[in-house]
Figure 1 (tube, rainbow, N blue to C red):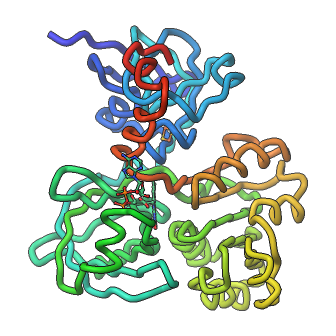
Figure 2 (cartoon, rainbow, N blue to C red):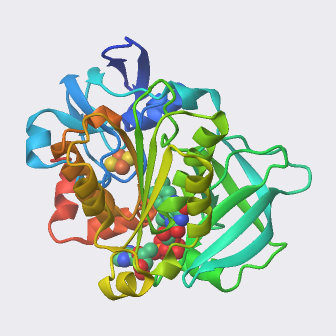
Length: 361
Ligand SMILES: Cc1cc2nc3c(=O)[nH]c(=O)nc-3n(C[C@H](O)[C@H](O)[C@H](O)COP(=O)(O)OP(=O)(O)OC[C@H]3O[C@@H](n4cnc5c(N)ncnc54)[C@H](O)[C@@H]3O)c2cc1C
Ligand code: FES
């Protein structure tokens, strides 16, 4: 008989059981309680919570997303923390995603097209006999590979009656799956997927101005959420920052410019990190999160949504909080590699393996 511990959520008072060896996040998901997460590997920090009572271990990946100060203030990572007894934790619940069931289905590649030099657009349709997937704007899915590994991709559109799912897939150098998408994948091929996943979703219980920041293909979930708010006819002001290396990498710039033309409360800010490319295109140069901070040195009045490369997310997370943004109003998906790859990379780092096995973290 496996030992079972109980986790209580401070605030809502909801409780759920955790079987031996399970992480808090896995147990919450099994109990139908939505807590925030993104990478599921301990590196992005979106599942950060505060441990008020009890003790956890990290037998899988070390909690690299927590700095020493956060650990000293009893922060834990729900995707990696395994309880050593009953716990009382303070975590942000995301009840809106609890109503959407996660499931597996087969999809057919209905269209494949180049979006940018290293980005492919895919349109997936439920395979014959499958019912359409439902999701909230901003959520992602896992492509299930034949050997059991998974590869996460954000869904770039809202759920539609025809079941179409749009993905923006960047070809990662040395990447197995994205290399195959760029090369061998053909229209008519089938894929197995599981979704919806993630908690990067619209928060509609707010009247605050919204600021969106995307890096590269981080534009995919931002597109879905912005289109959702525009479809609702929101009157809240919307700033959309999109950072990329070159003008060609802002692969849907005409769409974002069209949002700005049609919606007086929305402003679009393209930013290029390559100064020569920026000068040639007549666009703003620099890092996109620096552009946000130059325009909004005080973020205390905003709700901020961001997605894209881990380096951008990590830098922006710290800087935006320092600019007065309350942590509970910063929503993000960090486009990390899949959990199996991150686990291998982390385990390969000198000195880490022994600490993982001892559960020292
Ligand atoms: C929530 C979420 C949403 C995402 N959404 C999107 C999206 O919408 N669009 C998008 O383009 N991307 C997205 N990503 C990122 C995307 O999932 C990854 O780029 C993808 O999983 C890469 O898969 P791959 O099989 O091509 O590469 P992998 O084979 O997983 O390899 C990735 C990299 O790691 C290296 N590597 C592999 N194994 C090891 C090892 N053992 N040691 C050291 N290095 C190794 C490879 O050489 C390569 O450079 C998202 C990620 C997350 C977490
Ligand atoms: S650190 Fe837990 S989801 Fe990323």
